Every structure is written in structure tokens, then in C-alpha cells.
Length: 87
Image (cartoon, rainbow, N blue to C red; front, side):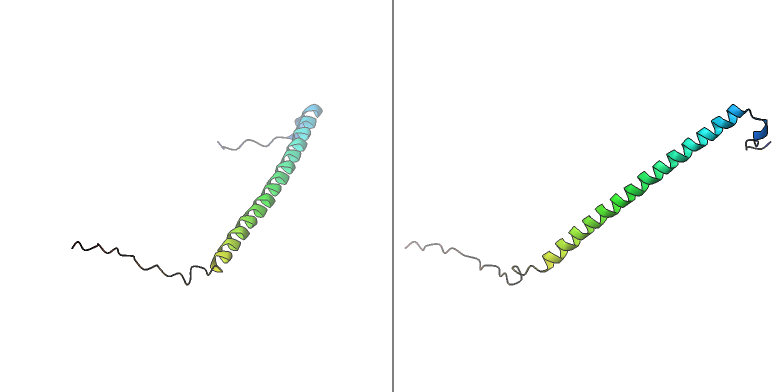
């Protein structure tokens, strides 16, 4: 015995049943088309947001590399307090 469903002979179906099958198939095709459009729009949005994040990150890294104010920073000399001699 096979796990597959047997093929349906459409010639034995009533006209109303064939019409119902066609209507369901048409609605399913419309649903798939709508989902594909949503998926495409989601991918476009993800691409735009991803490129925006990558460009902000790259700009930040490049601008930090250009900072030079800490390059000639010298640590101040330590101040030592002399204790006064009691005479």
C-alpha cells in the first residue's frame, strides 16, 4: 500500500466540484503572489537597513582613525609632596 493519495479523475467530478477546485486554486495562487510581494518588500527593507548600519559603522571607524588629539598625549609627571621637616 502506498503512502501517496490516489490520483483524482477529474472527469468523474461534478461541474460544481470542478468549479470549487478551480476557485480554490485561483485563491491560492493570489495568496502566493501576495506573499511573494511581501517577502520581496521585506528583503528590500532588510537590504536598505543593513546597508545603512554598515555605512554608519564604516563612517564611525574612519572618523575615529582620523582623530589625532591623543597621539601626542603625555602623562603628567607625578607630584610628590614633601613632608616639612620639624626642627
